[in-house]
Length: 416
Image (tube, rainbow, N blue to C red; front, side):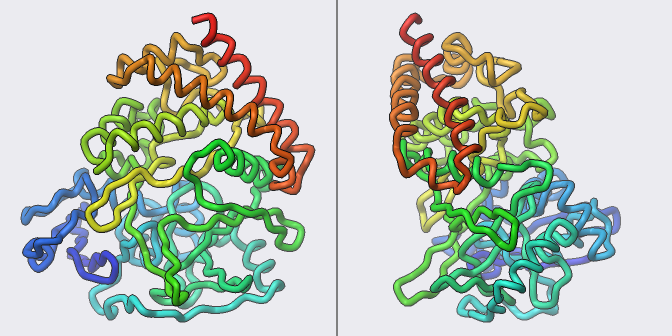
């Protein structure tokens, strides 16, 4: 039996074992269960003395790891099987999303006050960004144990006073650098534009900036699961995505592959959020916005819950991209609205069907759709918006897609 110690904010909360057949088993520590202020690691892993085995344990822990393409490359670099969740967590499960860390038994507990970093020169940063497609998350580099879910190359870093550093040991990162993939030119500008527009229309999103590293455009995203304190120290905030919370393994993040439905997501907020009415409202606003910008890739791992003390709230929105800007990408919504097979054919008819499926009031949703259409059209007139992405050609094209979609939906609402 192989074992990892599972920590939350530096405190041991349980153990993760792998048996000879490769099955995972998670068990809460008795000391954790005995605390009056104990909180579950995940909604899908409620506090209990009995262990969670196999399909009950895997969704949360596999959900910490990168998606398949990145996993395959990391496995090749480390010389391990890409299908072995346990060994992958053993090698890179130190600095993860949220406040969870997994360490081997013979490794000292994480030092929550650790501040070891490796400050990067501009040349070193260029070399690392160039290497990321071949070595995701800098896997295998001494002192680095970084893991982030997702299919795109990215690098967790600590940014302070304009200096960029790699976090070593248990030092928390503060930002994520996402270099532009070769096969999707304009992606950084598109995401920066959509994220900035989201902030303009009132959605809760983390700050983003665009930075050129060498000749490579990069999106720099401030982590919403980190708090930078007055003294400059950084505190991790626990989070989990909707797939983890609902018990779906990461390979089932799309509805058409057996992943979460919109009614599952709204049901999660209704039952689990500590302020469900506000979070359902905000989730619907984010859903409407994704439809208006033409984002067909808003799947279950692109929404998260954020945990602070006893509060369980919808996390800020992230990965907001107009996928319609690339004609070769699928137009099938990751989570279908009213059974629509294409994000281009979502009308008030589909929205009405969705409200019936998810037990949401149509008059309220209709009002929010109309309001978001108006905010997007007005927000696109903001002169600062086009400059936010440093690529006027791309952003003007994306703006045209969004204004056309918002205008069409608004007109169809008026006829409904």
